[in-house]
Length: 485
Image (tube, rainbow, N blue to C red):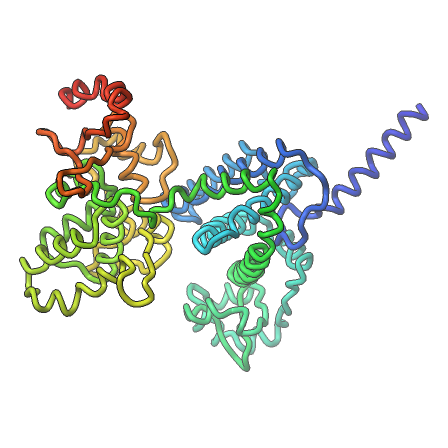
C-alpha cells in the first residue's frame, strides 16, 4: 500500500509538472523546447506536422475555412496524426508536446528562403485560426491572459453611449447584439486589418472591437511574432548547417513540399514552339491551360497573366529567343503591331530571363504564390482556378475538358503531392513517357532539340551512344502504351 501511495503521489506530481509545461492546447510557440529527443522522434514529429500543414493547405483551397466540411476534415486529420484537437482534453500531454516540438523543427527547415517562410507562415496561421476559433469564450479569455493579450473591455455605460456608432461601424450588428456582445478597446495599430475593412468603430486612436472579431487581433499578433521568429532562426542557420546529423533531415523536409527549383534551367531547349498547343492539352495544369487558351483566343494577356504563363513556359524549357518569338507572333495577330511589341513588351520578357534590369533570373510561380498574390480581376485569366473561380464555372470547365463527374469529385485524391504548375508538367511528362522525363539530343547545329514522333511529338528521344542500352530498356513497352491511347 505504501508503494502504491508513493507511486500515486509521484504520478500526480508528474501530471502537475506536465500541466504546468503545457497549460493550454494552443500556444504562440514563444519558448523553444529544451529536452533531448532521438533522431527517429525528430524525423517522425516533423513528417507528421508536414502532413498536417499540407492538409491545411489543401483544405484551404478546396473549402471555405469556416465551413463545417473544413472543420470536420481538419479535426479528423488532427486526431489521426495525434495533435491537440480538443482544448479540454485531460490526457493530451503527449499531443501538446508533439505539437510544440514539431513546430520548432519545421521552423528550422522552413526558415531557409523567403518562399519557404511564406508557405510555413500561411499554413501555421490557418492552423492557429482553426484552433483558436474552436475554443469556448471562457477558454479564449484564459488563452489571451496566458499570452499577455488581456485587452480592456469597455463598460456598459460607455457601450450604451456609443451604441449607435457601434451598430453603424460593425457589419451585421443590431442593438440587441451590441448589448449582448462584449467590446474591447484596442490600439489602432493592433486592429489595422479591421480598420481597413471598415469593420470597427474608431475613436481617439482606439478601435472598439467586438469579441467575435478578436481572432483577427490575435492572429495579427501571432503573425508578427512568428515572422520575427523565422527571421531570427534564419540568422542562426550557419551553426545548424554544420551539424551533419540535422542538415540532411532539414533539407529533406523543406524540399518535400516546395519541390525542385524551377529557376534552374535544366530543360532549356527541350520543347519547340510547335509543341505548345499539344502540350497544353496533355500536360499543362488547369491554370496554365486556361492562360494558353485565353492567349490563343484574344491574342493578348494582361501583365499578371504574362508573368504567370511566361515564367511557366520558361520553366518547362522555352529559351529566351523562343519566348520572344512565341509572344510576338501571338500579339501581332491581335491589336499590337511588331514595333509596339518590341518597344512595350519585349523588355519585360528579357527581364524575366535575367537579361535586363537587375539581371535577376526569375523563378516560375509556385501554387502558393499564385494563390496568395495578385488575385485576378475582371478581364484577367491568371490565378488559380481552384481558388479564384466560381465553383459552378470551374465544374463546367472541367466537364468541357471531358473529365467525368467521378474524376471531378476525386480531383484532389492524386498519388503525389503537387504544389507547383511546373511540377504538374514534369509529372505529366513522366507519365506519358513511361515514368521518365523526355530526354534531349543534339542536332547538327549543336542545339538541343527533342525528337518528335508522329503522335504527340513528346513521347521519345534519342540519347548519347554510351547510354543506348539503358535507353532501349527504358523504352520497352512505350510504343504499345501510346498505341493504346
